[in-house]
Image (cartoon, rainbow, N blue to C red; front, side, top):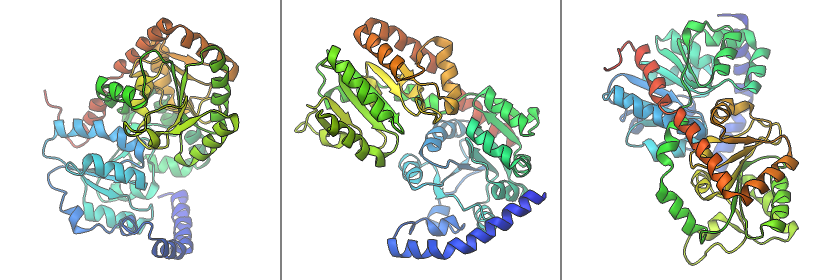
Length: 437
């Protein structure tokens, strides 16, 4: 155990004793974290523990909504490989927990992850008693990893991602992170770049595999024509409208998209804009920007029934979980977090519907998805808002060209098919079970 890990725990303990009284008081006064606070310290009720039946016990940690989505296809593959296994699915965030319970309440014991405080982690692991701890994407918590290995629990990082920003942060605490990664026995990464960064952090190459992104396996199943038909009715489309969907906008991107939309209206006045900020709390900013321009708008929650059809040219999505299916009715798509240096978003969520996908120069967090689009020619990267305006106008005015690019975009998703099964095989082998023929 190196000095960095001891220092981490010393700091961890100090912060715990300083902030715990405030957390406890806030939780009691506000009612927040009422259901999760005990679990975060490793106390799990019998009602949850009673659901853990079968062998081997596979604890999958998926921090938030995105990781839960990625875990879904992996869990399906694991159950196919080991029908008698017990799945324990933990999350850090409340939104992630709600989604986990919604999707897996009958298939897994859904719990909140313990804080990375050695007492909480040890209690949780001794209570749940997993055979393997599976961390999804970039969930690297030193106490979890050290304690699991000490207790004889196998550890794997699956559907792993090491973004540019994460890598830079890890380099600053390299002595700690390298020792933590040494506790992981198998790494099943998304992209070659993720594997390369692990090696630069000191992980032996023979522990690493590159198997693609499990999230994208689900996309093909979700691209159901019935969802497209449902959204056509929801958005009151007659069949000849052009629809620009701007998804997961961040920073000032909603302002940029609105500027572009005003230019599009001068040439293609029937165009509809559907805009979804990455964070719901930013909806107010989008509304203010639309009102300032004097353009009529509706919220997604205002067009939920036949008595309230879409009539405004702009719809602002103020709900969680509706964006991916909304891409089905797009003529063109812009994926946010990319015009500003924010790492990008998942462009394949739109590509699976056969839509031409536009994105800016910042795609560091989704290099795997970008690489797939680059391979087929299904993505359209732009350097700035001026180029985005020009190319969007071209494809909106030439729907046959847009359809051709869209077909190439869908092909990119098909190329990734099967990643979840490959990740599941890594866990299967780690447990010492040979793959089924």
